Length: 409
Image (cartoon, rainbow, N blue to C red):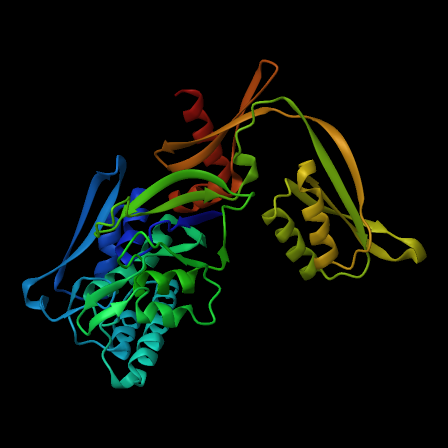
């Protein structure tokens, strides 16, 4: 499963989010083709590969056509916006488009979140006002575009670190506003999004669009989880001059522990087991998934017969010894277990490295394995199934053809 980790060390905005996705490999032409399904006009898109503070990344911008310029400055974003669309109009544009149901639902959720905040700040009902943030063409592109990017990159989960904003005040259409801007402060209410401010930056770093997206899409906050492997790092630049690197860093991660690079041929592993005779299949599947997410290297069950002839399951997992306490706690919290067995084992393993290989069928992760002079390769079955479906060939045939390609190249 692909995950996106956001490191908002210099805040977050809509264009920074999209710049990050482009730096992580989002195809610009494919993106524009999907965005055209919205059916709105009055703008052009620019994508610039550039360097700031000696760091390479991408700057994404929405440039409004002349007839849409000069109406209102977005509260907090510092851009020029077209004022004239309310929430109902925006949701109608999105829901009437040919975009996927996932994109429609996620984008509308973000707009509703921002709209509620703006309505509270201005003491209006949602249907009584036009929102500078919601009614802006570039905000529509940023919000809808971000979810288009997630779908095209096949990102299933977003994790975010602490959002960092500036301080002081900022001048907008309504006058001088404090930082964080009112809409952002309103969205912070009853929110678990971690947030802090930099006293050395006297301007806004977190825009309502950026905060709204993060709040609605992110279910996990903190550092990069132990079970994720960072495969690619990208930077999306902001347009403000803050006196330091103004960028959002994103990490494209893979949840497959088997994709970790391994250089040794022997290590130690801990086997943890517990017997369960009063757990449903659904509950068992859920706890197995949690154990994998918490860093277990493998999890499986074995059918057993316990005392009094009761059928039961033996839940087993392998993990690094350092993960033992954390995983045992999961077993006690998520199952009816009142005791576990642990056994420290020596393990022989193959050295392993993983590369993404481009083939005529599509990109695929290839594991290169070696032990004591012997070597072989391995392919991820889920990726083979996906590519086989796209290329309309049998999985077995595709495996053979990719293996042949790898052996000859």
